[in-house]
Length: 629
Image (tube, rainbow, N blue to C red; front, side):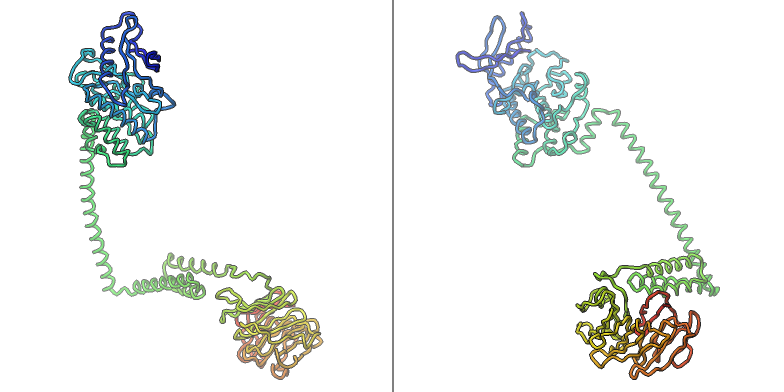
C-alpha cells in the first residue's frame, strides 16, 4: 500500500523511515483512508515491541508519516527464518506482548507475518505495518464482504473465508502461531503452489506437526504452536497475553497450560471438516467390527468342536491302552521297557561324555546300542549316531599342554595323574589334572632325553647320551648319577622298578645291560651275547625280575637281586614286545602266536605296536612294546 524511504530528520539529526502512499498522482480513497488509519493506530500505541511514529504530514499532495528506523531488517530477511527453540520462543513472546497491547488499545493487526516484524540493532522485534488494522467491534467499511485481506500463509481460517466481521483478536493469535511455527521449522504451516491452493489448505487441512519437519524440537513448543493454529477460534489461546504467558512458562522451565489435542478431539475436528469421509470411515469400522465378531464367534465354536474331538480321542486311546493291558500284551510292554532302558542308557552315556568321562559314556552308549538292536530303526539310528559321534570325538587329538621344549618320549601314569616326559636337554614331570610341572629338574643333559617314573610316581630316572640320573618327585632332590662310576657307558634306554630302587640301563652300542641302584652299590653289568644287542628293558610288577629284548630276536629274563639268568627265549622266536604280569614278564611270539612266560606256560597273545621306537603303555613301567629293529 505504501513505499518506505530512509531519510534524515534535519531538526533532530537522526535517521527515520518515511512511509509514503504509493506513488500515484491521485490517491485512491480507500488507500488514503487505510494510510491515515495506520498512522492513527501506530500513534495510539506505546510499547517497546511496536514501531514508534515520529511525525505525520503531506509532501506535494502525498501523505506520509515518519517512523523510527530499525537497522536489523525484518524476520524475513537474512539467511533463513528458522531459529533455535529458545530464541524462537523469546521472539514470539515479545511479539505476542506487543499484539496484546494493540488488542487492549482496541486494534486488530490482521496482517501479522515475518516481513512485518522489524528488528532493532540489538535484535529486539517490533511490530510494524498496521495498514490492514481495524478497531475491535467496528467495521471501517474499507473491507467488503467476501474480500480476503492479508497474507494467505499466515491468515486465520475465518479471515480466509472473507468474513471481515468475524476477524478479531483470535485471528492475530493464529498469525502469531504461524510465525512461531515458521521460526521453529523454517517454513510456514501452509504453502501451496498458488494463493487459492494456500487458502484451501488454511481452511481445510491440518498443519504438519513441527517435530516431523525438525526432529528433536521440544514437544511443549509444538503444542503451543498447534494450539494457536486451531481452526476454531474457541480452541485457540483466549488472548495474545495467554500465549505470551505460556511461552514464558516454557522459557522458565515451568509446565505449560496448553495440552496436546486428544485423539477423540482430533477425530471430531476431522469429521466436522470432512463429514462424508468420516461417515465412510465409521461404516468401514462397523463392517470390520462385524467381520471380526463373526470370526471370533466362529473360532470359538471351532475350538469347542476341536476340544470335544480331542477328549474323545484321548478316551479312545485310554480305552485301547486298558484293553491292551487287560489282554496281556507282554510283547508290547517288553518292547516299551526295552525302549525306555535304551533311551535311559543313551541319555546317561551322553551326559557322562559331556561331563568329560568319555570312556564310561561310550560304555553306556554301547549298552544302549545293544539294547536297541531289536527295536525300530529310529531307536537304533539314535544310539548308533551318538556312539559314532563320541567315538570320533574321543579319538581326535587335542593339545593339552605346551611344555616349551620338544618331547621325545612319554611315560604315562594315568592312575597317578602324572606323566614323565623326555625333552630337549632335560626331563619333566607333568600333572595331568592341572597340566603343571610339580617339580623342576634344572639339569643340562644331551639333547635327546628318555625319562621314566616308578610305580608310585615318587622317583624319576632319565638317560641321555652318556649320562643317567635319578631324582625324587615332587621335591626334585637328586638321588644319584650313573656316569660318575662308569664313564664308558652310553645308556640308550632305561626302566625303573616299581619301588624305584633299581634302574635298568641298555647300552645299544656295546650290547650291555646295566642294573643300577641310585645312591647305592656299583652298577652290575650283564654283557650281550655275540648274537644279541639289547634294545629295551622292563621290570616285573613286583620288581623281582628284569627282562631285556635284543635286536637278534632274543629275549632274556634275570633275577633282579642276583642277576642270575631265569629264562632265555631262543632266536627262532619273533619278539614283538614285552609286558609284565604279577609273576614275570610275558613275551609275544608273533602277531597271532601264543605268549610264553618265563616258566614256559602259554598266555593269551599281547597287542603289539609297529613304531620304530619303543613306547611305554598306560599299564605302567612293567609293560612296554617294541617294534622290530
